[in-house]
Every structure is written in structure tokens, then in C-alpha cells.
Amino acid sequence: MNQQALTPCGPPWLCHGHGKSRLPNVPLITHPPGAPPSQSDGKGVRRRDFTDPSTQADDRLLSPSGANSIRRTIWRNNVTTTPLEKSKPSLASLFARFRELALMGFILLLVALISLRNPNFLTFTNFKDILLDISILAMVALAQGMIIITRGIDLSVASMLGLTAMMVSFTVKAYPETPIVFTVLLGMALGGVLGSVNGLIITLGKVPPIIATLGTLSIYRGLVFLYSNGTWINAFEMPTAFKQLAKGALWVLPNLVIGALIVAALVYLFLNYLQAGRDIYALGTNPDAAAISGIRTQRITFMVYVISGVVCGLAGVMWASRFEAAQTN
Image (cartoon, rainbow, N blue to C red):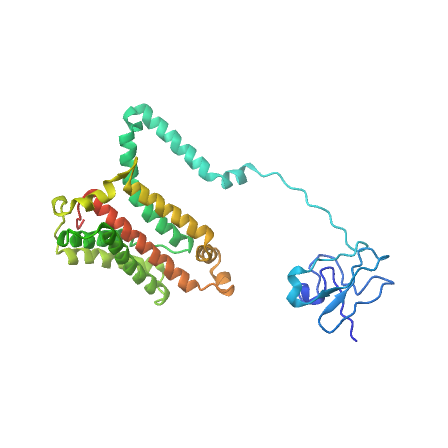
């Protein structure tokens, strides 16, 4: 019976390179001097634990199917391990790790300086207006951020927002009794269709994202004029329930701010706790490695552009409700 050589990490098939040791300067060893050779029972390779050459340990079955449960046995006479000393982190690494804190500190400093110049800046009404203004942009930024993670870009987000706002505004004008939930879902569906067009051009057409979305930016912008015939929807033409969608408040926070917080929470959970979210990071880190590992890169790319369209559709509905108008500009 042919004897299989043993290595510090087990049989040869467990080591990188099929028989080459993964440890530097560690030669392959068949068995310690004076110890009986390894035996095989037909199911796999058996080896003995030679940590203590004077004591014979129980045989342990080694097979490829049980490779994950194998404990490496290193012969003390040949290998000596030394724990690595932890190096102290540098100031630059600490700053890179907590750069968000530095940004928040700069914002707080800026708020303090502006407040000294104009005390009305710190009033609740002013902060409420600021939150209302940035909430819509925050939704769009979250959707854009997912695309940027995949090494792409979407230049048509503003055009998708404007087109969905215009189409939803015409709908609520023609059908004032439309339920608010249906109105929101309609805007998200329209945005999803627009986003899917971007995704199809990029994935199936093999067009670079910056070129594809630059083209759809102009197309969606032109559709705004084509759909509206150059007319506007003013505040008096919108139902009251639709106008209160963004301006209404739950306790203290306006509905628009609460919606932006919900979108932010959903994006955080999606990216950090779902497999599809982790695949987005893998695709952005190394597309080739992601494809080799089995991730369907085209599907992930298409998905992020659809999500961007859905979020932009929601932002378009909120935009029309917030400003109580739908304009071609």
C-alpha cells in the first residue's frame, strides 16, 4: 500500500498546491522517526497525532468531506510558533477609521459659527425647514450611493424625479379621490420602470453607466414636456390630502422626514444584513472576483438601478406634495 506523505496541515490534499506546505520553510514529513506510518481504512487517510512522540493518540479519520473539522497537528520538534505582537494604530489610520466623526465635528463647528452671526438659525422652525428641504435629496442620495458602490453612476435621478412628479400630479388632478397609498405606489412603480430601462441598457446593451444615464437624462427630461404639453400643475389643482402627504406631521417630525428616515433604515438593513446587499459590496470591490465566486453581477447591477428608480419615484411624489406644484422646469 502506498503511503501518503503527511504535512503540518494534514494530508497533501489539504495543503495549498497539493503536497506543498502552506507554512514557510517547513518541509514535508512522512512520519516522525521511530513512529509507525499512517494507515488507511479505505474511506480516507488516517494519521496519528505526533504532538507527543512517546504517546500514541487515537487515529482520526481525514477525508475531503470532513476537511472543515480537521485540527492541524504540528510536530513540535520541527515547527515553533510565536504569537505576533500587535502594532499600535497610527494617527492617520485612526482618522481614516473615524472620518465620519471628523465630518460631524466640522458640521457642528459650522452650525455654531452661523448661530453666532444669526441667532434665528437655532430655532425649531428653521431646523424643520432644513429637514424638509434635505429629506428628498437624502432619499435620492441613498439610491445613488448604492449605485456608486457597484462602481456605477446614475445621472438621470433628477429627470426620473421630475417625470414621476409630473405624471403623479396629473393623475391626482384628474382623479382627486385617489387614495394616498395608491398615489405613492404609483410613483414608485413609475420610477421602477424608468430605473429598469437604465438597468437594461447597462446590462444587456453593455453601455457604460455614465453614457447610458446621460442619454436617459435627456430622454426623461423631454418626456416631461411631452407628457405635460408645457403646462404646469398648480397648488389649487391638487387635492388637500395629497398636499398634506409631505407637510403633515406625526408627533413632532413631518411625514417627509419620517419617510426619509425609513428609507435610510431600509437601505442600511439591506446593505448590511441581506445577501443581495453584501453582493453589492462584493461587486463594487472586485467585479471579476465576484463573478468567479458565483455572484450574478448583471442581475445585481440591474437590481440597483431598479431600486434607484423606485426611490426616485417616491422622492418625486414627495417633491410634488412638498412644493404643491409640478413644473416643467
